[in-house]
Figure 1 (cartoon, rainbow, N blue to C red):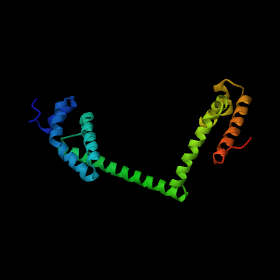
Figure 2: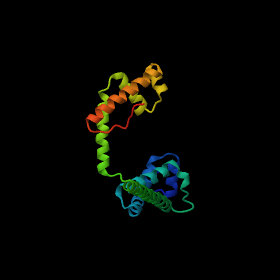
Figure 3: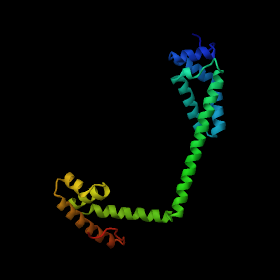
Figure 4: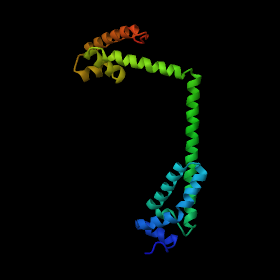
Length: 192
């Protein structure tokens, strides 16, 4: 079949028989219009390229969805393009609104960059302090506090009695508190 001279209906039928040369011809004929519309709606060359790819991929995967007896192929492709581009604009608008709400919530909660940096510094000090603990205490604390495990789970993982694990965690937390206080960090842990 000579795809360059074939009509759009014949090309869509050939695409239904997985003829990639037919898709290439449809792309050659209509990709400029598809990409142009996507660029106008999205105001982004990269997103327009993505939409163009999605529209032609949809044609490849489901050529039967493009009934050229109902409307010209270009019209069907542009309709799909417009719908997908509008969906992306809506998604981007929703994402932007969520980000603004999150930023506003943080600001109203008094969580600012200075506090964030201070929290990172404390986290680094805690990490360094945990690394100085004896292996038994360090492993038990890492599994319980950073791994979210119960005393019983930690005991099972380490193959130790539960009472031993509780003692190691208490001892480790005491050591951590002392180390952190020495570095000017107030410890959130108490003896228990």
